[in-house]
Image 1 (tube, one colour):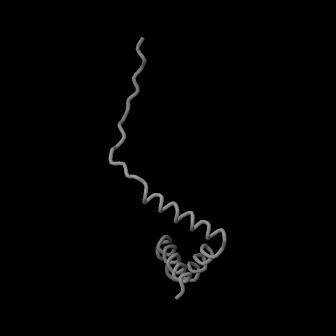
Image 2 (cartoon, one colour):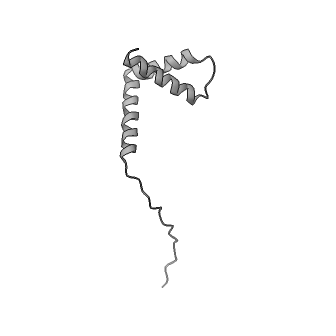
Image 3 (tube, helix red, strand yellow):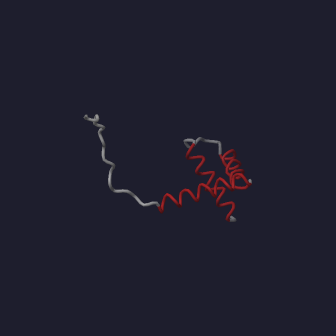
Length: 76
């Protein structure tokens, strides 16, 4: 299998899982995955998705929870 076919297979599997693993929808999932990965718009979306996941992985994780601040009325 070529790299493109592996990517299509992986994406079709992801779609299948997202839809609750329905029986008999493999061809529709394969076509949708192919269209997502092979059309210019689909390629751009995949690049954006990949870039977003990379930036999330590299983002610093905060271990401090934000404080709750209570507003108090001004006193004259």
